[in-house]
Amino acid sequence: MTTATHDSSPAAPHPGRTTLARARKELRLEPVEGLPRLVGRTLHRLLFRTISMIEQPIETFGEPVTPTRGWFRRDRHRHPRIDPTDYRLRIEGVAAPRSFTLDELRALPATTRVTVMECAGNGNHWMGSCGLVAQGVFRGPSLATLLDACGGPGAATHFAFHGLDPMRPLRPGYHYGLSLDELTRAGAIVALEMNGTPLPRARGYPARLLVPGIYSMSHVKWLGRIEGLTRPHRGFWNRHVFVNKRRRAGRWQKEEARWIGLKSALTRCLAHGDGWMLHGFAWGGGAPVDRVDVTFDGGETWHAAEVLGPTTYLDDPPADPEALRYAWWMFRIPFHPPAPGRYRLGSRAVAADGRVQPLEPDPDVRGHFDVVHVKWRDVTVPPT
Image 1 (spheres, one colour):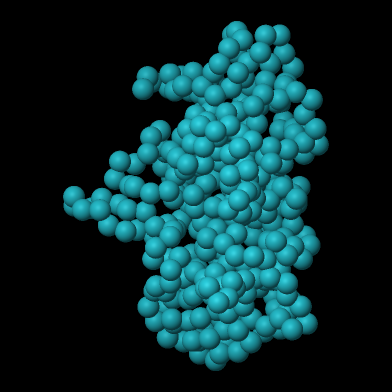
Image 2 (image 1 turned 180 degrees about the vertical axis):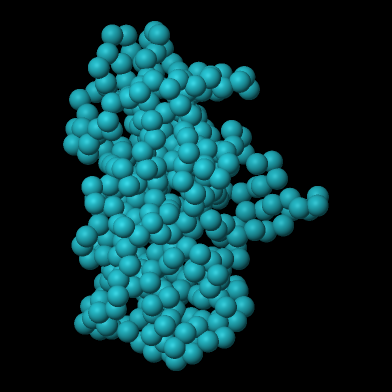
């Protein structure tokens, strides 16, 4: 790779939601790998829909907070219908086990989290595209508050979270386990609201786990039971599904997917003046994004984009910085191609702690999850 060059030309203020949603002219950013490249965008969507994998639509893929209607979908079981008057959240394996009604959960002190939610396999070599990600404003009691109401975790060092979405008699509802340390570091909450309204049924009504910074396979929807454990949860999804293999000392060993790594993605290319404006997001890693560089020539040269943090792009950001720690950062950069034709684009994030998004996959990791390397996109610029 050649030495990066940086264009620090100032850009206009970031356009608002309406500008992005109602763009008059837009160029399509095409993945360079995966099913979209092999079978086409339409068939790709249909194939993914058969396994309940629906990506965020392009119309909302530029909003600071993803509208509920634009949320991606990745389900394992059917959506249950839950009567809120009968709902109970049971907490077991703690100092003083108990159940909470929905009204009791609502009466507890609430915590807000503005956070990215992302499928662990988003943007992998099968998907190619990168639409299984969104950002929302979630609110509900923290897990710490719930445990305090149960007299503390007791001897529990790990927790398993069980959903109310069974497919009996074939298998029980979805379940996933995390350590108390991971949950504490993430600032986990039991979300009752999403974007200012009660959770929709498809998003886990009446309550779901929210674990900022960790992939969404852990954000158990339709949460019905929290089980305290003294050892890691060894359920099917933890052990056999959401795992990669990492090479250590010459041997390949299983490794569960967990924390979202530092990454970025170009999402839209909109008409702007006599050229174009590229928009995207950078997220993951739990540290502020210091810089995002964008290439228009497949990595030969790189140019610094304008980057906006959540305290800038949100209309009314929470005062607590912990609420924003796992929010994404928006970026944009003018694109003035010298001539019509096909261009290869990519973005690369740099975090304030010095981490840099890798250009290529890690040769010591095999698997479908936590894909963080640069997502290359091709764009065809028509004659003016």
